[in-house]
Image (cartoon, rainbow, N blue to C red; front, top):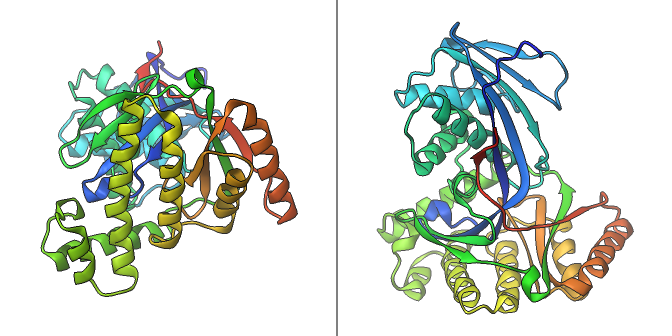
Length: 370
């Protein structure tokens, strides 16, 4: 790979969503932070129409593709994301047909629900934006990265992950309204008040391609159609809306979305008031809603949340799409080690894979490193 043309290095972070899960594609509220872990893309332009992809985690031989041949469904695995960015940019009318050399390195845990795939797409999209002077805004780049998931890979994801990776700022959580993509950065300093936001990577297989995520999104769209609103965000009388839906999964899904939006607003109010500890109960209530109404938890996630809470966490919940991945726990600094130890012991007793732990520190969004 020594012959790779490298004109710069771009980094995009993974994310932790403090609260506001499965609300983005319902035009609701979210509150993500970027984490210190990033995907780095070393990128250089070519003129021969070739796209060469290499990764520090995938052996020495690069994959060589013709830009003109890129099409949905032709790639899988990590290479689909940088290739998908090039395809999406061309589909949007940008001239990137000359090709590129792209070498990827990353320390964002894969399969942990921390948006490793979005970080990959966003790093490459930002690189192309800079190298080709495309003039795209961060929102436009997020849409390009989302198209990689939706159109190139066929995953009906929202745009939370991409927006968080491209738009978050250090020391803040991003309160974002997906109805119009407006928002504000809210100071979020756990360390300053003696707290830690602990990520518990359960290492339970996390994959959205099995249809669970798509089914939840389809349920929300079906409910909106039945209620005669363009999205669940437009519901003005939650009680009446829930009563109008048949008892069962459809009503449960809508109840989660409506109550989750309220929890985001209460969390933002607490952070604006400087009362970080007050968000703990909102996190725990969010998990219960995802477990019981959205039914996207799993034994490992429930064990992590329940054990952390019993060991002293102020609040805990699963994060991301669900069905595996990670949970977060808001803990007193002095309790962080005890909470992690309790979770690890309980996982061992139940025969689960040993979990991984790290602190989620609100970090900078995507940027050029060199």
